[in-house]
Image (cartoon, rainbow, N blue to C red; front, side, top):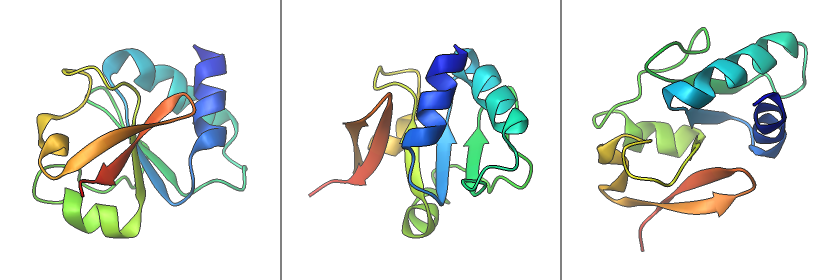
Length: 105
């Protein structure tokens, strides 16, 4: 789990928001906390079990605004492991161990 978290945090392009399901959230939050002095400190992790301090609200009303300000990622492309509202106008593209949220054409 820690290798996944390290790889995920290395992969993302900052500023970023990672939506993590309850299984992936704890390792991501722990690794991020342990490497707090990292240059990639503008990565926010949001999940149902906990989020990075200062994480913006992430829901169907805020996704468009967040998308214009941050790279958004999810940990899985399996339905149920990310919020349903993501697929309203967006698609998931593989990016390392994560999936990057991209605008639909």
